[in-house]
Length: 268
Image (cartoon, rainbow, N blue to C red; front, side, top):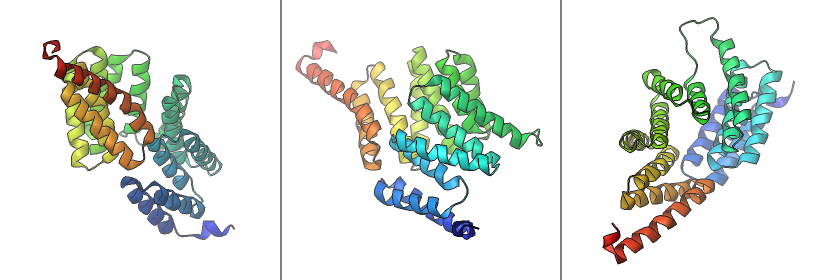
């Protein structure tokens, strides 16, 4: 028997907890050290997949793919159905980030199939919120906005608060796509308020980015600039360079527009 398989599970849990604490403060190097130690101590897929989730937040897609694939292989070898479901959820998210909608749907369906194995004996249990959030994104990409909305609304009834905030944010993005700015702003403001109450900095950065674009579309340029600037600042603090880079051009465009407006108020 390998030595690492003899390590008590609490060791892995403690290492992952410390990794998450450092990640939440944007101390990426320290977080990576604890994630690496957890992976070395863990013979299950959990540490690999937890590290994958963190790498996805950082936009480190190549590394995320490596860890997700290893976690998936471990889960399959151990016939760990829950691990398989989690790995496929993460691989679906990764595919969406890469713009590969076909692969995202394939992995999402594999995640759902694994979940159905877990809940087949419990007819009262529903698909996880993660699966519903993922499916709603895929349906929205296919233009099935009504179904996507219904699935997001279902997340409001039994989800934990972070999932509710994510569902609210996604509903806001769908409303923005529809041109319903009032509804979009309502959902996005609620989402940001929930993430802020939870002190979830990653959620705050994501919701502020979406809120900034909605405010910009509504012609509320000063508020849009503030929201996008705060999203950019939080992203920098967390080491999420991809998000900071994505938001920066919109901030520059708003700065130019606001400067022109200051020079010639008649443009307002």
